[in-house]
Length: 417
Image 1 (cartoon, rainbow, N blue to C red):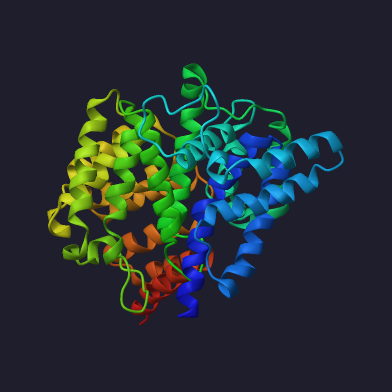
Image 2: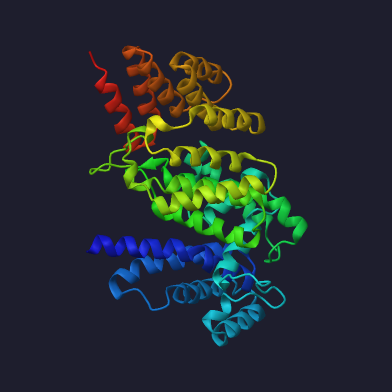
C-alpha cells in the first residue's frame, strides 16, 4: 500500500507542478526563482505528504509553500517583500490560479489552472528563445522532466542541458506572463506542438529506466494537447497531433506482457486495444486532414489510424501507409519518418527493399539503436540469422530502456545456432 500511495503522490505532484509554477510566475514574475521555489515545495510535499497525508487542496498547499519560499528569495527588496507577502496573506488560494484582469478565458471552457498551464507553455515557446531552448525549457517547466531525462532525449551531456535551460530562463527574465496575441500564437505554436509531441513520446516509450512507459507523461501530453485544441479548434496541426496521441495511446493495454515485457505491434492482442479511443482518434484524424494542408502530424495520425483500424496485423493496408510515408518524408527531415518509411517499403516490396532503404539512411542520420533494431528485424525476415543477431545485439547495447534492451536480446538469443 505504501508503494501505491507514493505513486499517487508522485502523480499529484507532476500534475500540479506546472499549474503552481504558472500561478507564481504570473503573480510575481521572476521565472527562475519561481521554478526553484516550486521545486522546493515539491520536495517538501514528497517528504511531508506520505507522513501527514495528502492535503484537501494539494495545489493550494503547494502554492502557499512555494509562495513563501519565493518571497523569502526576494527579501533583499524590503518594500517588494512586504507588498508581496501581504498580498499573498490576504489573497485566497484560488485567486492565484484565476486569470489576471483583462485576460479571462475568452469564452473558452477552461479551468483557471489550465489557463495558467497553457500560458506557461506558450511563455516557454517565446520567439526570443532558440527552438532547442524552447523545447528544453518546456519539457522542464511544463512536462516535469528532469534535466537528466531531457539531456538523454537530446543525446547531450546533462551539464550542457542544464546550462541551456538556465540561459533560457535568464532570457525570459522580465517577460510578462500573458497568453500571446494572434500573431505571436502562430509563431509559437509549432514549437509548442513539438514539445507536446516529445513529452508524449517520452511517456509512451521511456528513453531510459526499468519501465517501458511513463503513463503520467503520456496522459499529461494528451491533456495539454486537448487544452490547446480548445484554444484552436480549427487548427489542423493541433487536431492531427491529438489524433496521433489518442490513436497511439489506445494500444497501451496490449504493449506489455504479464511481466512487463515489450510486445511489438504485429504481435499484440488487438482485442485489448481501447476501441473507444480508436474511434475518437480516427474521427480526429479525418477532421485534421479536412482542416487544411496535410502536415507531419496529420500524416502520422493517418498512418496510426490505418494500423488501428486493421483487425489483424495481416490486414494492415501497407501500400496506403507507404504512400503516406512518401508524402511525410518529402515534408519533414525527421529520421524517424524515414525509418518508418523503410519498414513500409519492406512490408510492400519485401525485406531486401527495406534493407536497401535502411542502408540509404545509415549514411545520412546519426547512429541510433532503432536503426539497428529495424535492420535486425529485416535481416531476420530476409533469412540472415547471424547478421540479424548482431544487429539486435547492437541495438540492445545502444538503448537505455531496460524493457527494450531485454526484448532485443531475446530476439537475438532466439537466433542463436
